[in-house]
Image (cartoon, rainbow, N blue to C red):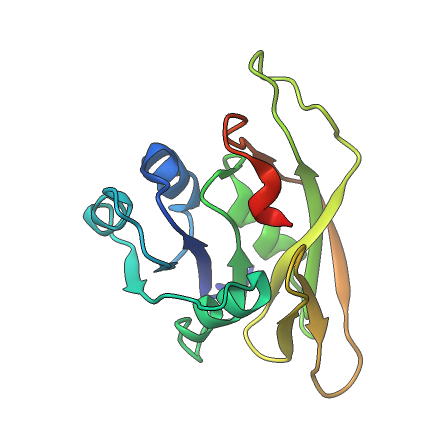
Length: 182
C-alpha cells in the first residue's frame, strides 16, 4: 500500500455540539483543516484543542460553493487526497485504509456511501445515496450556490473510483430550520 497524504477539510459555524465527535471521526487523516465562517460559540476552540488547523473567514454574501472553495484553499498543495465533510458527518472507523487501498495512480475522485440522515435509533433513513466529496488536491473546484458539487477542471480524463464499505454518516441537527440551505 502506498502512503498518501490525506487532508480532511470542512467549513463550519456554531457547531460546537458536533465538533468533538466530528474531529474524533476524522483523526485518521494526516491533517484536518477547518474554515470557521464566524462562530460565536466554542467551535473553533474545541477544534484547535484537538489539533485542527482552524482559519476564521466570513463569506459574504453567503454561497456554499464559495465557502467550500475557500476552505479548500487552506489545504496544502502537497496533499494527495482531499476529503470534504461537514461537522455533522461521521466516518465509520477504518475509512482511511479503505480509501488508500482503492486510490490507485491516476485516481482523481472517489464515490462512497453517504447516509444522509441517521435516525435516533441509529438506523439510516436512506442508505442508497452515493456521494463524491473525496478528490485529488488539484483539478477540482466547487460549483453552485446551494447543494454545491465538485466540478472537474483538471487536465486529462477524470478517474472516479467507487469504494465499497467507505461510509459517511450524516447526523443533522433536526431542530435547525433547513431554510438556510435555500
